Length: 402
Ligand code: SF4
Image 1 (cartoon, rainbow, N blue to C red):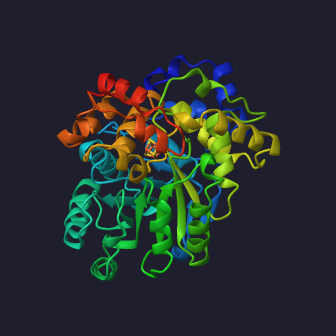
Image 2: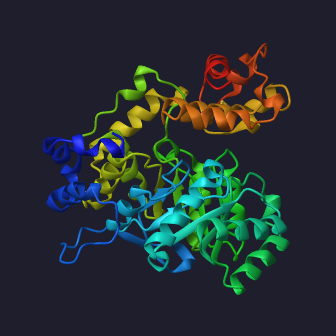
């Protein structure tokens, strides 16, 4: 349901969507049409999403964070206002999201509401050189209409060589100048465990956002790396929690939880891990936001039966989920192909239902990464730990993403 459709939403639908949040949740749904984020005088206190301490930052953050990798209303984005009403005041931006427009939309929200001090803004630098980080944080200030960010990440880090002494000096410089409060990195490909292990030895890394979902429970290497970070008091934020598939296959739809739907159950499963401070979520519709907030507000832990169902679901759809470990299948392919990224964009197309973004990102890959025709993927499939039929998905990617 799009925001503009909300007036057509019946009370029965509101109750259904907000049922987990109780009466206060229903009250919030009725308030969604409000264009202004300010709470009206006398309005009852809405339930607030629980908070956890983000590692060595010592700061309490909501367990649900607002993902910003999408286009927003540049004049006034109601989702920002609605999120804040429930205590979801932590916004996860990046210099490159939606071509920089998601930062600008958040900046306009900051400007219009004057609520900067009530917000936590994370942004990221796609440039992993120290000078690049400094340049991009200044660019972010202009877009975000602020003179500091709470957390600065190196975006989509793949190689630990960028966690250098020079980068430590830059992080320190930016902190001392009051431009950033905390520093870390995000990562979402197959080198995540290696990067987390390295970070656990670096006192200047405050927080990490990494790909973690119900499909990773048996991943011993990643779990060991998470333990090491937790011991070093690095704040851990989970992303890609939905473990979304790269396909529309019927198996993808089949999860049935006892109390929570699939999107809620996977969040509850991540929050059940005490090493995780928060999960960032791609809440691109108000319906998704309501369901996510409802799951966060509901104090009931995920039932063992639902955990078991998630594991069954993970097993049944294993070959439809790419872990982004290109270093494995890439060895069997012509140089330059990017299977992990291509399948991630296919996931944006299929699971996130965002074909525009998927095509935009695919178009930005180097030409050699987009040369999918005529490639024999059989050897790559044979070594894939998830037994993904790479040829089949690449064939479709060449049609829907090109
Ligand atoms: S296709 Fe398989 S080996 Fe290649 S990145 Fe995805 S999960 Fe890893």
